[in-house]
Image 1 (cartoon, one colour):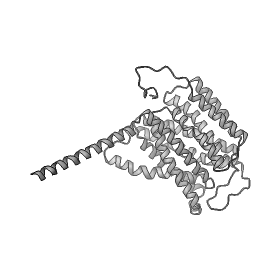
Image 2: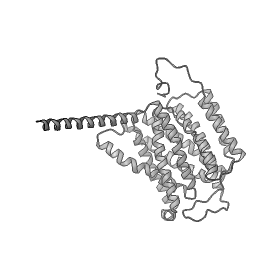
Image 3: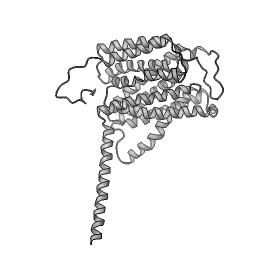
Image 4: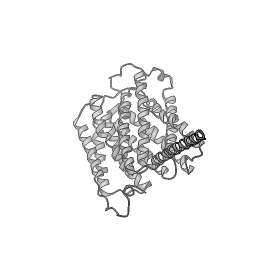
Length: 361
């Protein structure tokens, strides 16, 4: 009799432990689905660090064709999220409460992947890391402010307009600086030629690519938040972006050069591309979380700390020259971001919570 009761007690203990474990995972899951403001800020900072690490890896791979790099950078997103979404679907949970936005989001994802990632890789090989990142982020903030106002009804105040004007000047100044000598893209381990190349790889074209990349990212991130607010899971949006982007970029590679040059890519470049993909995916997770609770411009403002990180990495890691125009352009970028960060906010309503004052709904 006592042995039976002890078995029953053990069964109850196991059941209680299992119930507690399930409850803990449910609380964790709900926190990830509906993160608070504090977690959103942490996620934004984490995305800045991770994107910087991804950019360093991408800068290291500038001797490889930019579309090949962008193709493999998108691969980790697909490899991780495909089985995850399959499990979510099998469990009966919806991955998108409204499927009408999926056909609209696919071409936007292509803009972010092909123009955003491809053009940014071209810019890295033309004007370097220290100049590419502030130009891209400045363009991204400008585009996000405009699109946030159009799609999400987020206000654009006078101080924001001053910030945008400052960032435009910064982009123009940075476009005149050259962080690296222009390079030809190779798929072998041979030394990169130091001979001048055609005008397509000039600093001006590199700066235009950085601007195009930033605007493409602005279109993508704002539209992604728009669809997430209407029922699409962040993981689903990321999966659509990864699959459509990888297929489109692979098609571009097949048409431009074919797949034979991939066999000649040295191991060091493979390592850089794989690391770039991993860092980019984890940064994507972080910024997607931040975008759920913070305004688009606020998220990219936090992310703009990449300017300082990229400048340090470009100079210390890749020996990019420190020119007067580069310093002036970065200073103007930081000034524009500071103006945006210190804009006057309306007096808080005592009836509202801390979290609601930061939401854009």
